[in-house]
Image: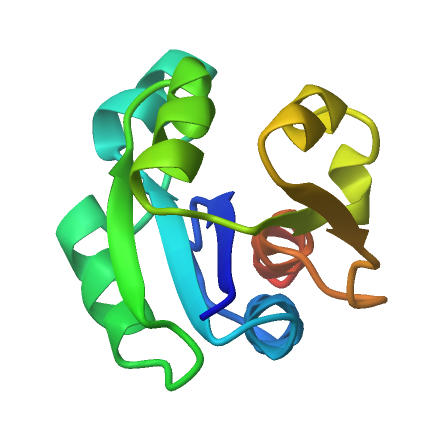
Length: 130
């Protein structure tokens, strides 16, 4: 079985999220999603609208996702790769080159982002409609 992992906050779910999850799953047989906890988002200075538990519930309902694990710190990726027997690490192309050191543990693939959509764009568009 080929196992794939990706990470993110996955707040304000949109078709760009679905696209990366679908493409990540297509690279293997089993997709693990490392979901940023509320505490980790606070450390990153990133505010999520939905709580970790609510975001986890949504991710678990997506047919491409086989397992959701908490992402609590930047440095846990190597441990996650090893403990979950991961073959492929996937991130969006906006992270290109930032995780190349993980290639010592598994294949690292950066997938192109879906054009015209992001959580930041949704938030900005909503603000501009007021």
